[in-house]
Amino acid sequence: MTHAISASGIALLQEFEGFRATPGQLPNGAWVVGYGHVRAEPGAPVTQSEATDLLSLDIAPFEKLVNERVTQPLTQSQFDAAVCFAFSIGAEAFEQSQVLRRIN
Image 1 (cartoon, helix red, strand yellow):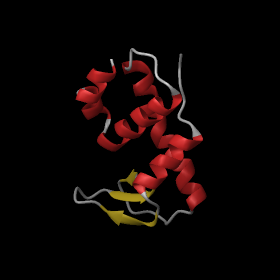
Image 2 (cartoon, helix red, strand yellow):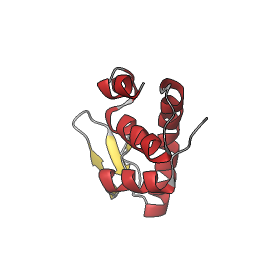
Image 3 (cartoon, helix red, strand yellow):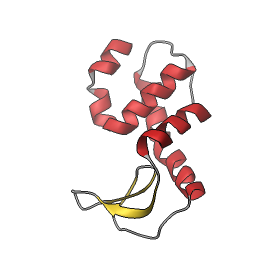
Image 4 (tube, rainbow, N blue to C red):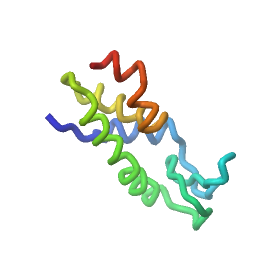
């Protein structure tokens, strides 16, 4: 079964990431805006609605990753948590994580 992140999962990510209307520079030189959206250039500020749209685009690869790498059935809340975790640490770290090994 293929899952998609729920509204509760998106709300959880928004809470963890926090909203930043104005881009802020990261130590690596990239810029972050909205709910953890990373850009190469600072660009314009975003509204919360625009930030939510960007977050939806940003989490899509992590939904796919969790769907592909998790071999055990997950409840919706477990799937949401796994996507949030993967989004937070990155795809490569998720694939090598003890969390993924324990889920499977």
